[in-house]
Length: 313
Image (cartoon, rainbow, N blue to C red):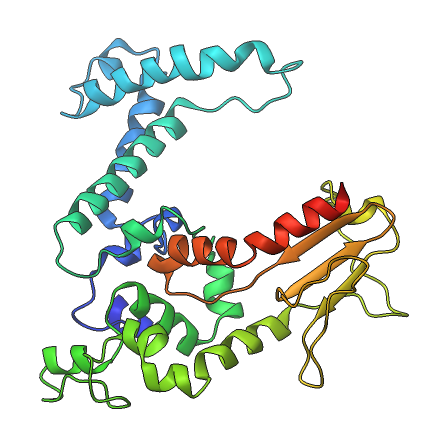
């Protein structure tokens, strides 16, 4: 029923519903996990009883292991931090909360082991090494995201989007090749980043430009949105920062007094007072291609970086 409600394919791995958000999941809890939480809370409450009959009741099979982990955690993790707890204003973590976190961690470890044994639908294991997972909250899922966006997000991570290869696997089609180029297998990865016809037609660069348009700057005569968080920023060290980026009307050019170069990063900022430059390059890659694309971008502007460094000297 959950798969049907969320628009997941029937072949999708159900662990996506119950994995933590740091594992690209929805953080739902299975009834079995909630039952374990209930037993932990019950054990914690009964353990404070002054009645010897109550405290001597048989314990669950997993109780000794959890209590051993709790003692280790309190002695080496919490104990090492006690000298930095200030004047006692920090909230004391209850033993029951720590035990519940152990149960949650064990459940997530099971999902990871399960994913490692899958032939497909386990790409999130690699993506997590260089992508920051979305902190999905129920408010986001119910109010901020449309049903279509949620359906796409979940199916994309489960490799169950209705591309040509999956349609053949599900018995919905007999043609596995890409319907655009007619050469490679029509997987989601091929359609989004690997189709030569789409590349030559400018579809990929158009997507890049559309996403770049979303980045908003404070226009002249307007005020920036205030935030309570005030992180350090080099942009606050001077008032003469100039922002340059391509528009549909024209392409920018780096001023010759800054650097005589024909290179144009997506966003180029410079301050003559500080003699500093900030280059921002934007890309919309397939997630597992992020390390490779990062290397490509660094090498692309290596000479420009050296020229700017020498000019500053």
